Length: 207
View 1 (cartoon, helix red, strand yellow):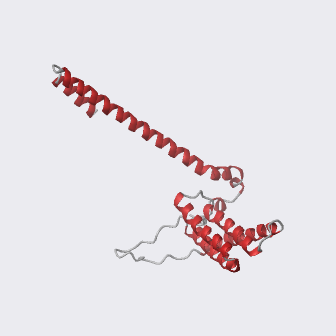
View 2: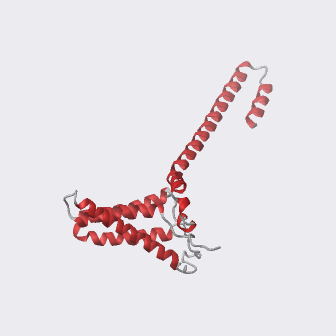
View 3: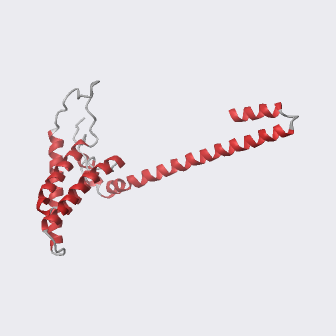
């Protein structure tokens, strides 16, 4: 609107100056073209963001459609598609532990234990609000542990480790390598998957 008003004003001002009027028209054309390009770019980014959101929610939607409807609400709420930040954190931790377990097979069980601890922490802390801090950055109050949620995180992690153990035993008949190294990889893979999609915060609220 401001551009249209300014263009109209300059047209009246330079109505008798053909050269100046041409410059006004060229400037107006350039400004309108740039504005259209900006609008098209904004529309394209918005459409791309919508597509990415749909893709990100696809696994959760499929789960809710075919499986979630048969589960209790408290269990159904445990599933959540990961954000990019959560994906990077979980992938970095589990990837490092899996790599170290392969590089140092004699310490593979220790890295499985570290992966399990990390998985429990990620599942328990996911979605949990940050503690209130004072001006110095210190936590104002220690958050109480929700034992039901903590126990659920332990159970989920234990199931991941057991699934990794079963998968490692199955692969041991096919892959000719140390069982501990295979177990480290399979356990880390299962724990990585659980830490990406599982949470316990707010899943057992009765309000």
